[in-house]
Image 1 (cartoon, rainbow, N blue to C red):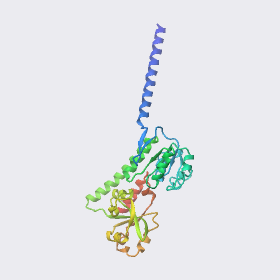
Image 2 (tube, rainbow, N blue to C red; image 1 turned 180 degrees about the vertical axis):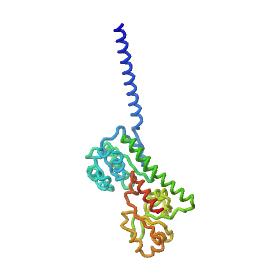
Image 3 (cartoon, one colour; image 1 turned 135 degrees about the vertical axis):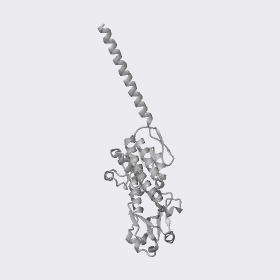
Image 4 (cartoon, rainbow, N blue to C red; image 1 turned 120 degrees about the vertical axis):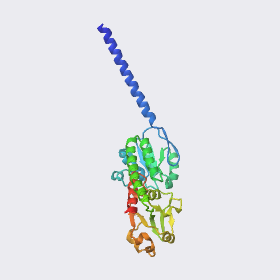
Length: 307
């Protein structure tokens, strides 16, 4: 009797362990299937990334900031000379500049994944692909597109939880800005006319409707007077600027200008923004880099418009 009972207990134990193992295997299978093996990047290119990358090269300061925010600093094998945030990014091996990355330096690092962008890097993307590198392009032109990119990179790199936390924080803070804008408009306050100066020399370079800066101005509660052009960045005449008469004037910190310079420009005192001292400097990195700090740029623009 005891022997039969012992055999029965052993059989039940073995069955339980088998079921547990099967359950774990099934769960592992579900987790493996939850991450796709192929992705479509911001340029519409299909990119096969079957395994979570262990060695990553970033050819974009925005991508570098995303990777470090996701806790992937140890996996970043190299980045560009433009990658200056966070401080740890400065210490990484350099693969050239943002506009002229060194292909040999990238290949030498043997990356599983290269994160790049479009625009000036479009030609080199094809070249990297021809050399057998796995390249994913991150090229958001809006705040919402940036949040999506963070989630996508989180999925690709196996850090979805951290990516979701960052994305939710950005969305919550953006929603708070949206509520303040809506309350202001409900109270009858019209959106102020806003101009963003990228660079000034005879005429002014600014951000058109296709730029992330224009999207930020709109979300922050302003009316970008440069939206008359659908491109991203272009030259805007001083004559036209004075006629348009912006009420808020924003300058990127890289514009080589400051409020004192603008006050001294001949004829510019006819603009309401100059008359009323509504001239503000916005840190470039917060509005050009489509990464986690873009929410700081949105809040900075909103604060300038409504202060």
